[in-house]
Length: 321
Image (cartoon, rainbow, N blue to C red; front, side, top):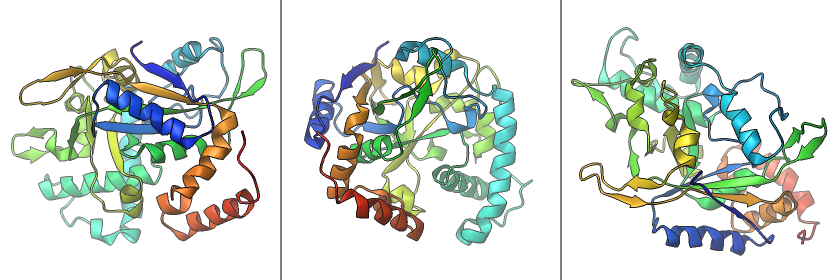
């Protein structure tokens, strides 16, 4: 595997940032990095649409990270089943969305091909992604502190070992170089028509969605969450080729294309930072000091109340060393 791994040795936020900066300098990443945080170090990079809702957090192939990863890679919905689910979810969500976001209403009939409808559907998909609807997109952020927040904010994840014991897991932050950042509809066009989100999902040996590999998609700032979290999306092709699996593609990255026009390439590696569970609480408190918390990343009253409920107790505690 090409992925580099680093374990955070202290509870200090500055040491975490130092490790990220060392990776950026080593591979001359510059501003091309995107980041993602996981509560469980073992979690793989798989879009929510393809996750098996019946899979349990228990190990059956072994307890090492490599063995758990192999297990998780096969715990996913088949392409055809996921595509059918995607179609139903998207259309049902669109009906609910109109009551809350009338600005996204499209007056073009659903059965009529239209670039106007296509653009609105991509905007609807961006909103759906940020509010938890299973889609074939995976959230990343251009702000590494936001990624760290998502790694440490939720309660510690627990997995059942092969011995039947529940074990608390460390967290992880993924750091990936992705130079291609485009609007989704800039990636693929058939004749004079932009393809709608569901058109990309047709099953086949080479669906159009394969063009999404190695590209991060920048959604428009049509919602406060997207703006606050510095969101970009990556797409899970899930075609018939194994290399189209997003996790495999990003884990084994050894080079990246700097320019689609010239095919200029450079060496790179993905970095996976292990955040020991004992440092999570201290790091979350330090993130709060620099303005990274649930209230700022989820700008609504419910999130503000959730943040304040946490903060009133947290301020009584000292950092865990």
